[in-house]
Length: 404
Image (cartoon, rainbow, N blue to C red):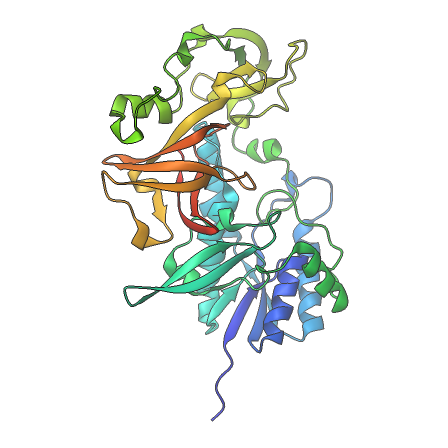
């Protein structure tokens, strides 16, 4: 009796990465179905008159035709709106910086899309992510490891840092072991229409969107003050970990001073200009402030959406931009490897990053009753509430969390 081919539903986005993903799986003997996710309808906020999803959908369909695989489109715009767009608006409104790409993978690609694939009796879903999956055994149980992509410039493991074991068990990443140039070469060789297509920029699945225009749909412009805080301000006096003290010996006050965001007051700064809404700005931002004559460039060091104030600092080495640690609330901690979960009072050494493509930095994780403290060997620049921190052991992503 011939064994049934394993069925894989590929998220065909109309880009080169997912096109080659589908091709490789077919070559490996899988039964492949191409599925295009339509996540956005509102053309009023896209840049220029082009309609990216129509073009992408057509390209995805042409790739499926070329490969001789079934193709269908699925409209996930309602789920996308409720799970991703609503989250973005509420985060920006609260003065935090969301990461829609990470959420999109957790909530859309590896949840709603995965469920749609399972209805088609699929064994796996596959995406064109630059990351790798390995299986290991822990106490007699299969455990899946999320490994960085072989192409250091393209490694996307950070974007998948919120996936769990169940999601990983059903995921395939066929191009994770390749370099981007190799992926393009395969597409060219197979005469896929997407071979030369530029990588998409902008919001996950929405296409080319101007973020302020997008946010202005719900977060209306509102004039407020831009204040600059001097580097020698007393607010920075207690920053940093006291010399000669072991991390485990830090008391909760010292930990919080190091890992919680600083609280600024209007009296600490001097007005230099006005802005159109504190919720449009994020920590570390330099562009869009439109303040001249300051000598050194101005950077956003904090936003206060309640009082509608933006706090800025002069120069890249301003102490308001640098922090030695961050905190993740208990309910916001996620372990990809549940067997590595830290118990209260335990510490562990990992490498960590707070944004995509940022080089990994050595960090110590301290688990306390209220949550996880992450202390870096070297101060980190532009730690923003709402973003994700991910920690790694070598090439493997172990866990992640939302920065408080």
